[in-house]
Length: 152
Image (cartoon, rainbow, N blue to C red; front, side, top):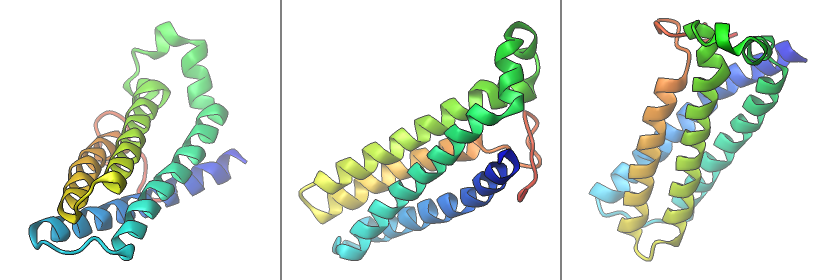
C-alpha cells in the first residue's frame, strides 16, 4: 500500500501543478484583458482547489504510513539534524498544508467577489503564492535539501 500511495502522490503532483498553472494563466488573462468570469473559469477555480485537496488526502495518508516520518518522530533529537529527514518529517507537510490553505482561501474569496476583475485578481494572487510555496516544498531531483525523481 505504501508504494502505491507514493506512486499516486508523485504522479498526482503533476495534475496539481498543471491545474494550478492553468488556473493562474486563466486568471492572469482574465484580469489583464478584462475578460468575463464565466462558468468555465468558475469550474477551473473549483477543480483546482478540489484537485489540491485530493493530493492533500494522498499526502496525509502517505505521511501516516511513511517509515521515514515514523523514524523522524521516534528519533526526533537525532533526526532533526538530517535535512532529508527534517524535510519529510516536518517541512514538506507544513509547507504543503500552507499551500492548500492558500488555494482554499483564494478559491473561496474569489467565489464571493462581486466583480469579474476582482475574482480574477483574487485567484491570481492567492494561487500564485500557493504555487511558489509548492515549488519550494516539492523534493525536486536537484534540490540540495531533499531530492526525489520526477516520477516514482
